[in-house]
Image (tube, rainbow, N blue to C red):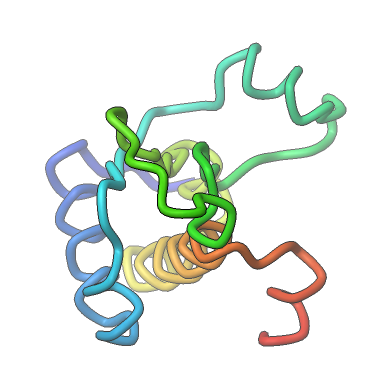
Length: 122
């Protein structure tokens, strides 16, 4: 596994966001896109992940199609997990592609797609 600092990781996130299809990214409202080193124990427990399972990203919030016009005060959150993404990647370009794919996947959850629908699109 190679290492990059937090500033370089944020730059790769920004580049990946720029490369995603414009309409889908432009229409995202009230969503914070963050990163942290690893998922918390609470996040892992909530998703019922086993020790041998990893998590690259996580969408937390109410999907757009379920909001029914309700105004939310707190933003939804997409979190990318730096260490698992680094572990999966062989170099900076591969990391950027993994970040881009993970962002696309989590944004799809924001729009209300489930894993089966996302896999069909992929």
